[in-house]
Every structure is written in C-alpha cells, then in structure tokens.
Length: 116
Image (cartoon, rainbow, N blue to C red; front, side, top):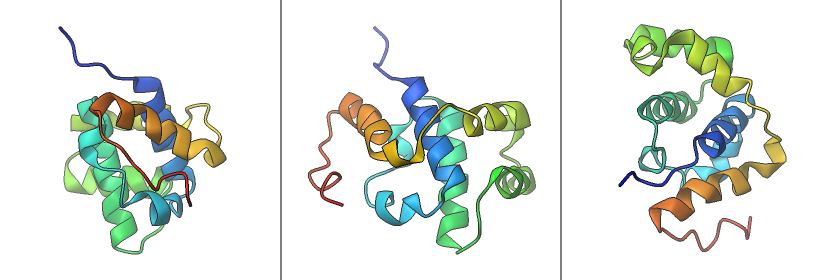
C-alpha cells in the first residue's frame, strides 16, 4: 500500500513559496519538510526555508545556486526538477489551499491556517 500524496499540490505550494518567499512568513509555523512526500520536494522546501531563515531572497536563480553550493541540487533532480516546481501552474494567493492538501494526507490539523 502506498502512502497517499498529491505531488501536484506539493509542486504548487513550492512554486508559490519560491515566487513569493514572504509566504513563509505565514506558512513557516505549519509547513514542514515532513509534509512533502517526494524526497526532492522535501529538499527543495528545506533549501527555500533555509534562505528564508537567513533573510535572503529566494527565487529560481538564488535557490538553484544555494542548492548547488550545498550539494543538494543533483540529489533533488537537478535544475530541471527545480524549474518544473517553479513553473508549476499555481496562483500564489492559493498557497493555503495547496498546503492544506498535503496536510490532509498526513492527518494533521492546522487550526489557524485559514485565520490569517
């Protein structure tokens, strides 16, 4: 039996977070690498989160560079997979909905995610 997941929702949330790192100002308390089923998505999120914690800008170029320097880019499917996540057809205002999907698969509850 496979673990339920929604890779499209994971990619959509990652796209939003990369395109608007300020989303992590609201999502950081709820979004965790544990929510991501795909190992590459976990690494990408961890890298974006690290840039955010350091107060650095995060976009496709800076994230690719940070992951390359950390040695995690190729482990995460390379620049092609990172670009695929970035280019995911997502609407940044829907980030909460995209995040709620993997949360629902983990059977966690995020009681305040919609109160923001």
